Image (cartoon, rainbow, N blue to C red; front, side, top):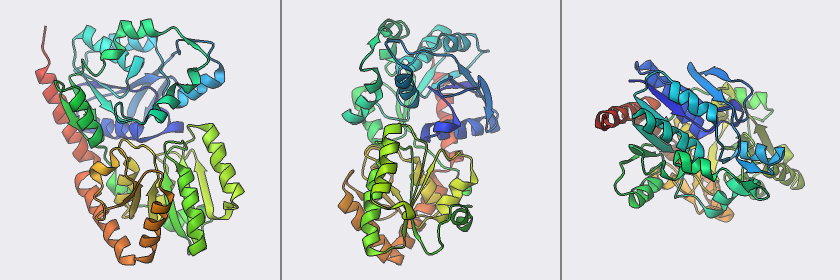
Length: 413
């Protein structure tokens, strides 16, 4: 069967969990004899076409239907949550050689383009909710539209035309990476087929990192206790909590060292983070790596170099980085938010704290530091879980089965 993957953007410079999921499943679909390609806007990209990981990526011109939108606001929308539109993308989807299924990884007007074309071509489409829809804090949702506050939106007619309010309602199936989101969608749309399909991990890759190579490259002494956080530099990911935790931990042991890895999707927050590190005099104990390529060996080496993995997010639909940490055998401390609580077993393969609760987080990190046995048990349980249940081959087989069922059930006119 032949499919196409529709995303809002697809560039290495702002790589996240969605991009990883789309690429890894696409690679395995192709390997199993089921052609697919990725289509998206040209947001943040300079190239119209690419081949990433062996998968063809086609990008198309786009625009934001707002009057009075300056370049800075447009860039902020490109980075996060922009409700864009692309006639060229619509035309490309309409003219593509026969497709059996369209897989949307975006909503709003962009997702509605996929809905509109799928309806016109009478092919089924499914929607994956990577960032959440109903399980999103109000403050996070407001941040997506903040850049448009001083502009006038004229694109509501476009949304009405392509059916932006019916992307989920008309889908042949809705995939949720988080269990909380899946339950909420099933409650709100009881007649829809809702599937909880978690993200996966290239378990062998993240089990093969070389920790000393990472420490040597970034000047981190071998006796440092490395606390690792991987995620977009963004208020949602709450790296400031990790910095606060580090400051307290250093009062107990001066060997602690924090490694922060992530692309900057909120420049103001990135500046605030860097300034906080400087103001607290923590530069010697913090390694901040912005824009690390997801394919870089430095990424798996970072996990191998770490002693503990911390996910301090205020909101997290899933938390694919936990799987990466597990695959590397790292003990995990994570905020009890969104999809995280649906797959982490507290006290078994991870320790969890209330989102934003710095003191609680510090207590858990200190407990792990003081108990080698606890670290080893939690790390080992996570390792087994990642390699057994979350390898991308397992996830892709489930996705492929769903594709076949959706195609078979789609009415032919």
